[in-house]
Image (cartoon, rainbow, N blue to C red):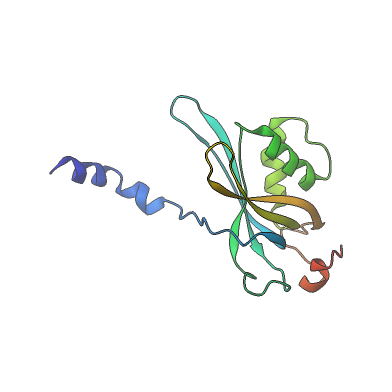
Length: 161
């Protein structure tokens, strides 16, 4: 067995268990989004860092071409705490003061409906375009793990439960 075949055989179970990561992002704009999933982990070989990822589904009747599509609302790392601190504080509706609060706040956010702004900017450093999603506000709190309340159209207008 050649080296490639050995490596593939040794990592076959990892492949089966690997999560497919959706890299699709909606066009620039503001969307009503249901937070549907939260994952966290540790990465890095020598310089380890924590990461957190929130996934959402667009539930915005005003944007039928993207309604129902999932995307990464936030991918945060301990290399840039300011971004996750801001998002967690918005989701918790209070100032998050410690890094151990991040996972519980993000976990409890699944089921919340939020307003998200998606914007694409060109990096001055490497001249590459990056698309980011920023949580602006919570419009509906989770209730028993599911969202219930105003219609999608009312949420798009800024109504709250």
